[in-house]
Length: 506
Image (cartoon, rainbow, N blue to C red):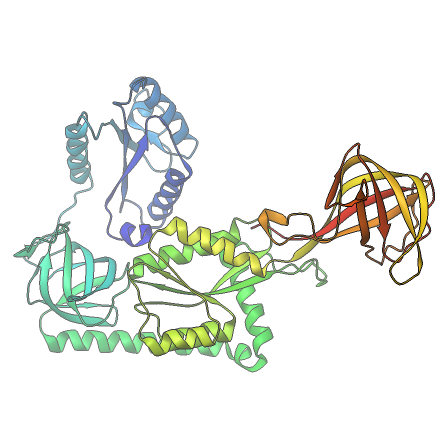
């Protein structure tokens, strides 16, 4: 969303809270600004607004000074810093205004500063020309069809105009402002809401006004031809991928991930495998292109920000309802379908297909809940390690030979618990309230384990004062029989332990 918005931006207003200062999100915007400013000099500028100056305990001068110092660490210099003849840096000096959204203090100064900045940049547009702009977002709305939010960059738009964006076109049926109030004409720099596209345009794509329907169709034909040529060139570059099959495809995917996000494929310099990259496929559906890109970036960041070697691989992304082809793709690639926004399932057949193919469709309309659900779901792909936990230790004070129900001689150890607890089989609560875990026993003599480490020995009986017991606490005495082991001696140490499966945490 930020990227598509930056395409329509002449001046970025960087809002920094007086009580928080420069945050990671602030740094993201600064980096985006610097990238645009370097690639297109003089095409964009920055104005800083220090907000929340009305909060109790805020010293405005001190807060401004702190934020100016933080901005200098990222090569952003304000006019106050440069007033004494200081270096303006690569991007020049920017204006800074303390403001309050509650009291309104400083807002008039901010508006005047933006007007001054537009004069300095000589921002002009011909209102009489055909409209041109940028698609900020697009979505499907019930009863309206395709709704596109755009910012006009040049010229004007009116109801009935033919518009083209990428390979998508249509005639404007409704032209509204952002409050959904009808507009007679959309003017330069104005955000507008357009209803009339036949298919969803992509966020960030330019939008142009055509003189007639024939001209609009010709523009779409030319762009489709360009797109086919680009796809053909990409296909020719991927011939080896087509021939060598799945292994090459996975290798190419990891290579692209490494180039774009710095992911490691888990191989050493000599080609020997150091560890295994965990690839987690996902299918993403959303109600708009802007939301689709945001969800993709958020899901991918789960992998990039993890300490584990994880690649979140969106195998398919599209807007609109979940269709049978989405379910088929998810089933084929062993992926879940993550749905964001007002998106449903196409029909009952698609729902039944998902259930029969065991494809999980996970719908959310709040992004943080989607990410929490995704992390929990992704854990099933992560490797499992077995963790041993010792629950208690006991000293063998005496050994008694008794006859069991099968008239076989077995040894019962008289114990005193020295640490923790002893449990009978399946008496220990599982991890995070899961199923009870089996408890096992081993015997140590002279500090060394004398039972077979390959065998998991369980208790045949656990009694306290001649009564069966589920557990025995530290300091208590009990009698313990161990299945398949009768070589108990006075002075031995008995340990009670369990083995728990734990998945790595993202």
